[in-house]
Length: 154
Image (cartoon, rainbow, N blue to C red; front, side, top):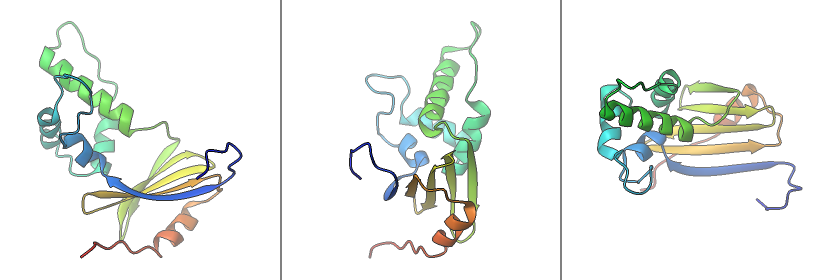
């Protein structure tokens, strides 16, 4: 895609780690010498039975506005900070999230009426299909997904 600001429409395809994989990896999400590390993240995921991005989004939506008080322990504050930071990174400002449940599982981030991001979750990867400048509906996305075959390299 050109960096030219006159771009009217774009369709991109990509593959990356899922948020659940990324947040539990050695990747230093918080930068520098943070007390929040992958062991803490793994613990948060295990305690809350978070196994995929959809469960992560549900957890973050319920817990993203946790408040600390002067009585909150430092370990709980660190945990709350980690949850809020994950929410900031994983939950962009969206109008809504549509769940995909069928041959593939995943979600659609409905950013606005002309920008949508479809994520298919398979084998620890997130397959991303982004639509910019298209006025598309769920039926169009469903018909597109029915044509896609995601297979592993051998």
